[in-house]
Amino acid sequence: MNYCKGRALTCLLVLFSSLLFSPSLHAQNKVLGEVELVGASKVENTSGVWIDGQYVGYLSELKGSKKLLLLPGDHDITVRQGGYLDFVQKVSVRAGEKQSIDVKMEKDTRVTLPTVTAEIKLEVKPNRAAVFVDGVFVGHIAEFEGPGKALLVAPGKHKIKISLPGYHTFETEIDLVANQKSTVKTEMVAGGPAEGTPLPK
Image 1 (spheres, rainbow, N blue to C red):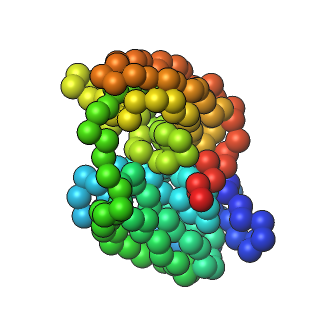
Image 2 (image 1 turned 90 degrees about the horizontal axis):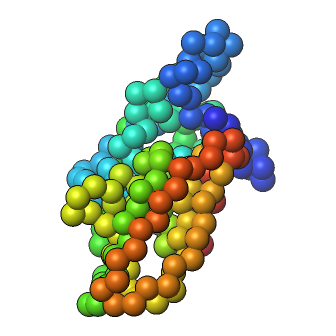
């Protein structure tokens, strides 16, 4: 997958195992550098990762066949989780070198959780997809599926966006009253843009 930041003319490649058998990509790997993000806890490991402003996945999945391989040069890394301050770091990548970055999220004391909530069950495939509520990244689908798990929101209208590079973005609006339970169910359609959801401002 190819992500480009036009103004800075920097690109990154997140290479999946199905692509690694290509001889041309093996040759290309020699000029790329690897960045490993190491999370301190479940909070970090479930946080969303943006490279040069483009969403690439949640932290703990960016390893093995989905490891981050970037072109040499400077790249901006942002790790985001609802209720926490953004982790932001600039990294300088060198060809053929691997570097690790320890990620630690800190709670945002300005955020207050609602005392009265409504519940949204998410049944979405693939469950790697990122979930945004009113433009705020809140996690990925797998965190909210299964018995006893759900997305809790304040009563009222909310815009739900589900995004994953390579798939068409799914968007819906939901209006809930206090203690109401609702379900969002969909199977994302492959063939969308390779670029992930841009980093929300």
